[in-house]
Amino acid sequence: MPFKRYLSGLIFVILLILTSCQNKSIEKPNILWITIEDTSPHFIGCYGNDDANTPVIDQLANEGVRFNNAFSTGTVCSPGRTAIITGVKTYKTGTGNHRSAITVPADMKGFPYYLKQQGYYTTNSKKTDYNVADEAGYTAEAWHESADTAGWWNRPEGQPFFAVFNFMDSHQSRTMTHTYGWYRKQVLNKLEENERITENDFEMPPFYKDTPKMRKQFARVYNSLKLTDNKIGALIERLEADGLKENTIIFFYADHGQGIPRGKTNGINLGYRVPFIAWFPEKYKHLSPWGTGGVVTDELLSFEDLAPTVISLAEGAIPDHMTGRVLLGDKRSDETDHLVLSSDRADNGIDMVRTVTNGKYLYSRNFMPYIPEARYIRYMEISEIKQQMRSDLAQNTLNEIQKRLFEPRATESLYDIENDRWELTNLADDPAHQELLNEMRQRLKTEMLNSRDVLLLPEYELETIAKTQAPYDYRLSELYAINEIMESVWLAGVRNKETAAKQIQNLAHTNQVVRYWAAVGLRSQSAEIIRGYENELKQAMKDSYPPVSITAAAMVYNQFHDAEAEGILKDYLLHENDMLALLTIHYLMYIEKKLPFVETVKASREKEGRSYNPKAAAVDFLGSLGLIPNNPSHRQ
Image 1 (cartoon, rainbow, N blue to C red):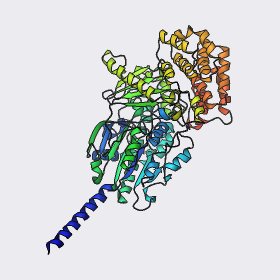
Image 2 (image 1 turned 30 degrees about the vertical axis):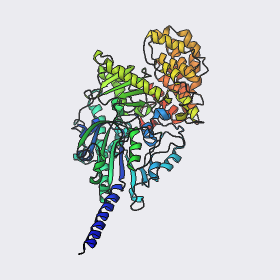
Image 3 (image 1 turned 120 degrees about the vertical axis):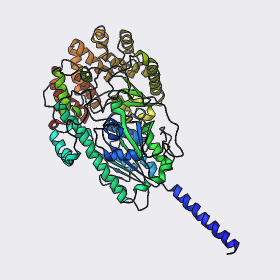
Image 4 (image 1 turned 90 degrees about the vertical axis):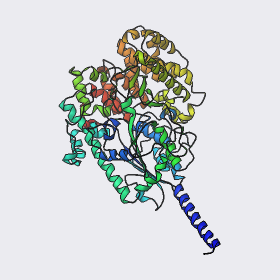
């Protein structure tokens, strides 16, 4: 063969190989998200629970990467999912209150929208639950399909896909809220005998009384997860049968912590921390900075990171409003040494908690600590396990740890979540941890100021703003006096005479939100301190800003049984604004003399057009007095 012909042939072969490699390198991966409900890593086998029966999830971890420090940015489903879909923390967007409908900026698209621009077929089966205005329109813009039938199988052949499958079987409704008969039919009877976890096959968390009745209920957690695991296995089998597994990166995670009393809705590790696993096929293993094959990482991850990571995998441009980290690939961000998390209203249970974690310790600041961890939330009160807990409390058969769930919280908590997995020992007052406590406290305050936390606004005001402007934008304007407001917020929950004097002074502040937080802060002060400010609180009842008037009236009525305060509260129970009615009922849940309000609450419950939250709170109120049964037939 002449040398020139040989050389030409060699060059052609080299170019062919290079082109093939180049095409292989730019082939975009399919991305599969497997999401489950209401689950903490405490109850999954690969996270060290030998009582669990989760072989499919465990196998994903054995072949992929398991994250020890993955956290939801919220503690109930809709705030967590809203942070995921927007790529922005809820205390910036104002979307942290469960099942609200808050306007977000027009250019803050649901992140699958940006994947569509990169040629991906996006499907969601099927949960949305986004706290945004026009959720239907927002969903339609983000997904090609969002339905029970959605999946990769409907895409044009050869198109890369991003597919989400959400499994409901571990949801709180299955593990505690629906009746035991429903659970037996829909969960237990769908498992083979050898798959079931019986009532004596697990360790009971120590904050629950260990009795046969409680074990009967708690076994639901393990069996619901087993059914979930089975369904995940069937989905992965379908992916493999369709010849797609080796082209697909799989992410598995839960939407927030465990759906049991003290878990979900609480701003502690059991509410925030989630299982999270990433699985890579051979051709995309190079994208994992941790390696694969059962690797465990302590790297911090929050839901804010998911949108920019997936957009980066799709080779898209990450929008400026997304400030989370890119976890994978060439554009991987530097690791962080802490996360800031948040927990706000869940159903009818008003609250505000802000949290900092470094993965080993978790610090939480409770701004409404008069509310206990086992607070009144209708969706929990109808469950047999919560009713049993309240019955045991009434009979005084709980130990100090178990009783603590029903008592006012500490203003600050600091838990060693590495060594104290059930968060039993609060280290906030431990002299050996004061330096760490101060560091985390300052980090939290700095983040709340720098992010201009818009959820410091009462929900009544937040909803009013959202009718004309996105709270995300409002918080950046001069109208939002964050520094003045934060000074008042930061006093809330601190229990002493000096702080109370400052809060009384702030009741006369020109800024109405400052006045509101002064009143909220006073609500956590002792009865002895409140008794010294009867005149000032009675004056605050006349405040032109309804959240101040309601909060002050609740204190005056509870402390002094004042007729004028009673009248103010009854008027607001029937107010046309749902958020004001909800706030009023919320305060009534935590007062001693409830009976004078029974008929007004009944009228509020029946009021035409009343939305879900005040109605649920009204039923909670009546149920707490034994005036209606706490069972699912009365669910709102």
